[in-house]
Length: 131
Image (cartoon, rainbow, N blue to C red; front, side, top):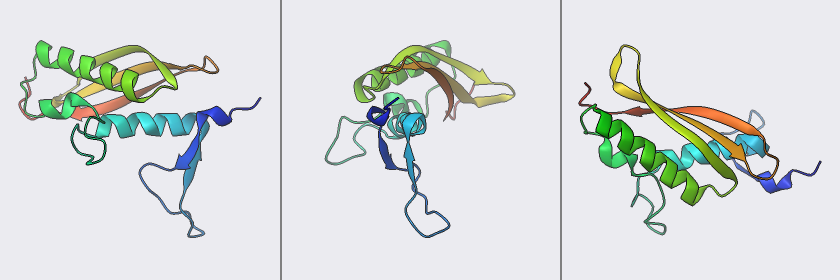
């Protein structure tokens, strides 16, 4: 099965192989790294792409409330729908990390469009206000 549509590119975060070459990633790993890249980039952070990124970075000092959790979920879904066309976002669940009031765990369930493979990942988001 030809799966070149999933992409090949530089590994994120940037790494060097033991042989001294720049590391690359491909297939499902590249999609997962792209999701982390979208979520880790704040809007306005890239000069040539000022709209690229996720709005959760505007919530860093938000109180740890149900409203903040809803805003994080909405911002994550919006960013992934807009900037990662290879996936369909199935669900975005946000919950407080056990015993860590300033950490929100963002669980993203997604489907790769071209082969219907389902995957998920958990992205930690740190707020400072807590509960």
